[in-house]
Image 1: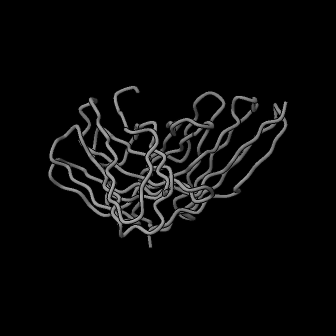
Image 2 (image 1 turned 90 degrees about the vertical axis):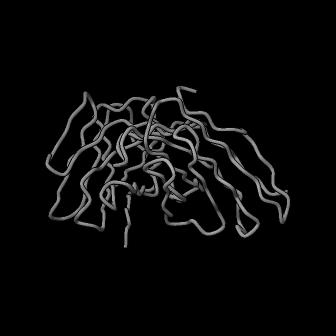
Image 3 (image 1 turned 180 degrees about the vertical axis):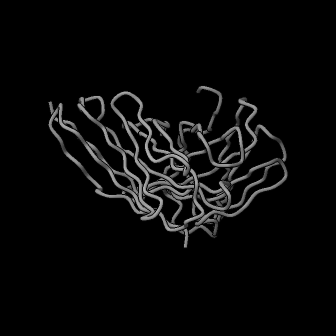
Length: 113
Length: 112
């Protein structure tokens, strides 16, 4: 996957359940991002991290949580507080923390059972 | 607030024609404007980007123009080909570049 790997490719969530989406990169990039993609709404920023052990909320952070304990990893947890989690989730990374030249993973499709 | 508006949402052209997609942004402090192409079932990929100190940038059949005063920028594709068919997203940087906000996307269809 060209240096950034998302898993799983498909994920199903039961009501009231928390699920975690994995994102790993071996590009030595400082910054990592999570976007949610819904039809007709483009890419909406959930969380971003410009450096290890630091992250900021994006526009639609409610119902999601992240951690950035390692440079290579930026997992996203979709909590039960997120009432409409069905979407395609894209993780991305960039060399700098300035949002330049993002490299995207192949995405995770999350659906609710 | 931080926003990027993109138009049109769909665009259909004949092969060989030109295509233009336009975006506006809300924060005059934004200084980086990339364009991404997402083919069906694939990840978005960067195709061209421009910084605020440049008015125009070209790469073969693709060009981007920036009007800082009006806070809008455009993607121009000349001599379109069927393989140009995809969804195109513009974006603008906010929060000193740490935050990249995308437009809603334009689905381009190039008919042979």
